[in-house]
Image (cartoon, rainbow, N blue to C red):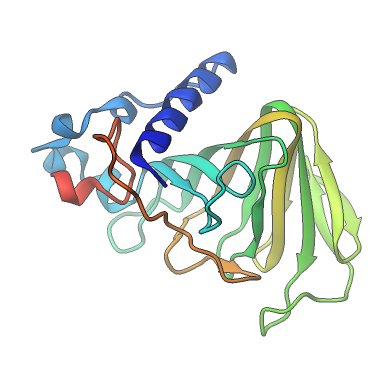
Length: 222
């Protein structure tokens, strides 16, 4: 992805967050130069990988398969006692986050505004294949029975709870969706298992200076 594309998506995301009255921490809009010398006071942000994240999953087509997200808070078992994580994301219309599951993380996916969020589910087998058995999720605390490959549509305000080991893919319907995630500690490096091989972190073509840093870039600038 080009840096200019990433910068434009970040600007658009800030507008979408504001339209939905969702606001980010002050450090979300630090320039790269403002990060210099801040590790001592901002170490939790750096060490726990908080902040901007954006990927096209190696597709080369962000609008069709991609996700913009911002990690607001996250624990780090090696450094603190925080056991939870919160993210905010934007799922465009038909913009797929591909099928994946987590072996450790339990999570709630929340439609915080915009369009309808459609999610497809499978239970996973120990070898990572799709299970052919029915299973349960909870929608706003209500037990919901699903068949393999079952779909759920979340309207604004609704949420679904997934145990670890449940495959899911999602995208917006009719309008972009402000997607929240509340979970146990998140580890994107070691606890993302995609059904098909994808690229989790983008290769960036530096055609202009970064507007804001991605969470993977702090240590380059500090």
